[in-house]
Each structure stands twice: as structure tokens, then as C-alpha cells.
Length: 183
Image 1 (cartoon, helix red, strand yellow):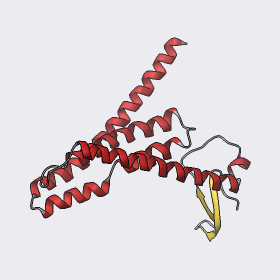
Image 2 (spheres, helix red, strand yellow; image 1 turned 180 degrees about the vertical axis):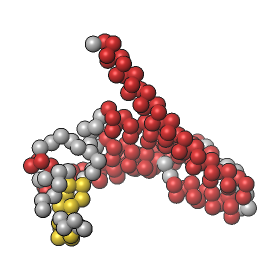
Image 3 (tube, one colour; image 1 turned 60 degrees about the vertical axis):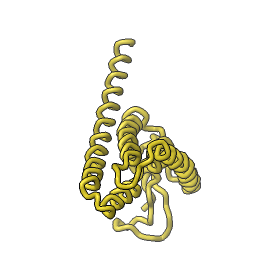
Image 4 (spheres, one colour; image 1 turned 45 degrees about the vertical axis):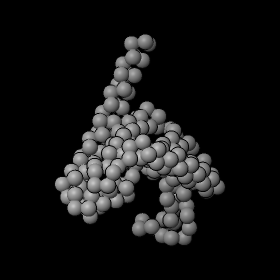
């Protein structure tokens, strides 16, 4: 069976459904392109390379942004790691906003999600530093601070994503209302 629209044929590995190994470039995006264009393997290889390049470059910028924030908000040993906390919370908020805007307002922006969310925000936010900071607090016998940090980071991160989603949907509704009034 031929690869489905938006998929890249990778080789002879068989999938459970009997198709040759095919992986989508971006499985939840329908670009509206004709199937014969979407199925061109040369186009997909080029698209994958460009997406990886975009992710890598944006990731480098995101990591530098995280480093800059960490320099601006240094954390003394045994204290609440505010820099990592604010990095992850602001990143979570922006992820909520950007994902909704890309999915609902700009669905054909193929490079935007890998660029902004996977690349920049993926490197800007940092689960590994969050875990290292919590571990350092626990190893330094700052159990209360470690628990407060670990739990508040998770709760505030989830709340920030939710707030970003709500805000983006509000902006989209407001934009629709303004467009209806103007037309």
C-alpha cells in the first residue's frame, strides 16, 4: 500500500498494518496540498532536513535565552531556583498560546511549530534543569523547599499552559468578532 498523504516512506520495515515503514512529517497537519505532491519522497527528505535545521537553530537561540535568564536570576545554593521556575512557567504559557494560534488561526504554517515550540521553547524550557534543581535541594537536605519547588513547578506549569490556551482562544474569538463587525 502506498504511503498515506503527509507521510515519508523510510524503507522496508513493515508496520503493523502491513504498509512499508512510513512516518508522517507532521502527522496532525493537513496542508491542503494535492496527494501527488505530498507523496514525493524527495520533497519529504528535503522537508525533514529543513525542519531539523530549523529546530536546531531555534533550539540554540532558546538555550541562549534560558542561559541569559539564569544569569539575570542566579540561584544561591539551597534556595528556591526562581530562574528555572520562571523559565519553565513563561515557556509553558507561550507554548499554550502558540499551539492554539498555530492550530486554530494559522494551520498551514508548517515550519512555525517546529521553529517556535519544538526548537525555541523546547530548548528554553528545561525539564532536566528542573529535576537537577529539585535533586540538589533534596541532597542538600532542603526537603521542604525541594517539595514546594517540584510541586509548584508542575502545578504552575500546567496552569500556565491552560492560561495560554484560554488567552489564545479569547484573542481568536475577539479577532472573529472584530472582523464580523468590520464586514
